[in-house]
Amino acid sequence: MSKQKINYILMMLYQFFMVITPLLTTPYVVRVLGPEKIGEDAYANSFVQMFLVFVMLGIASYGKKVIATVDSEFDGKRDNQNKHKKALKEQFGGVFGIQFLAMCGMLVLYLVLVTLFFQGSIVFYLYGFMIIAYGFDISWYFIARGQLGKIMTRTVLIRLVTIMSIFLLVKTEEDLWIYVFANCFLLLLGQVYIWFFLIRELGGLSIRRSHLKKHVKPILVLAVIPVSAMIYISVNRVVLGAVAGEVEVGYYNQAYKLYTIGLLFVQALAAVLMPRLVHFYEIGEMERFREMIAFFFRYICASVLPVCLGIVAVSTALIHVFLGVAFMPVVPVIIILILSLFLAAISDLFGMQIMVIRGQNRAYAYSGIIGSIVSFGFNLFIVTMLASEGTALAFLVGNLVIVSIQMYFIRDLLSLKQIIKMMMPYLLYSLTMMACILAVPHIYSGPSFYTLAIQCVVGLGSYLVILFIRRDEILHYVLSSFRKKQLSKDKRMEEI
Image 1 (cartoon, rainbow, N blue to C red):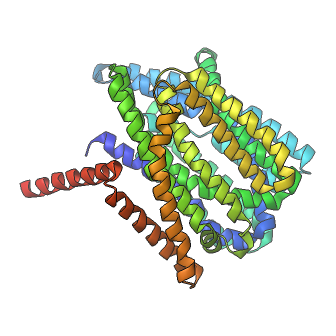
Image 2: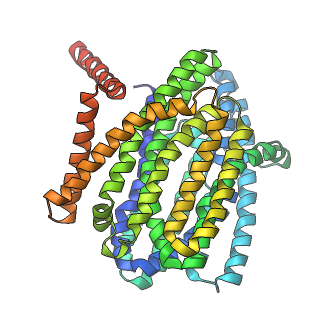
Image 3: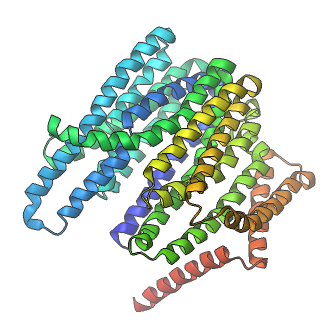
């Protein structure tokens, strides 16, 4: 197996592990802490997220590009190892220096605001460790160099210790501070651990003012997108807490955690798309570029639409099993949020995979800024009436505005008529699958866990049957890819 394939698999495992491990503790934590304490934690977490955006400033994306560029310049030049190491040290020092300064500034501001407006809450103070942890996060360096094994080792070790600490130490509602401390402080320890590998590899750290200056402008340009996204994610949650209370933030936060599981699938898909699209665009194969865009849009419709409508159909049983009866108000919130997942997938294709490749960076940034402003304004208007459901609606509206703007800028490649024509069959297939899932509780009335399991089997089975009957192109592509892999494996076994 090639190094690229190994790194891709490790990246998928890393992303999966980062999302799935907090969900392992969620059923236990929500039952021990209860909606009120979970809401307090969610409110504090939403507040600190605003500062984390300004700590990272899109540095992870920029840092990976800078380090990968240095490696490509010295690729195959074994007689220049010292120069290679020196260049890596200078470039890393320049990028990390900005990250460190941003962390120091945000930490001071955060502590001042916590002291002034939150009466020195211990939970808010403990979240300060998270700002420090993000300030020392250098995962981007090792990802750029293809050294994902070191990150995986760190992640698995720290996450397992965190999970054990939560199960052993968090026993009552009063243990909220232990839960926050375990998550934040152990995250910081994980960042410290990875620094030993960096120091050993580079032989030290070099941060000079001249190295910082050249990186400031490109980092600030890239920061526009995450900062604008922060408005309709973190700020809206803070507004929700201020208007409707911390319990409503807890409901919203638990729904958002489930949304991030689906988002992981979208991000994994995006990692596969870009290299192939870039290849066709760079060599001028515009017809193939258009064909690939149309195919991947159908792929998103075929895979993400049924996931969204399937979760809507099983939402009641899902929340009952996963979070418990106390969190049943989360059901309408997750229904609204999960519909945003389809828009997020389309936005990733239109924005990251098309507009960025074509150099439409400014238009891409505008879509995020305008969508964030609309979402924030809509949230202010509706949150007093609908609380957490209103904030979820504001999130949906923000994503809809972003996709609409991006659709305008790529209309020469994919028109609205084409989009509707490609989407409609999969929408009808998914609605048919949804009807089959909703019929299950009327036929079987057992425990929620078994009902959920049967609904999942019925939903997946009915959808695949529909695709098979319709001789769908996407299903044919997936099956043919699997056959090719199996034939290749059988051939290797015969040779052995």
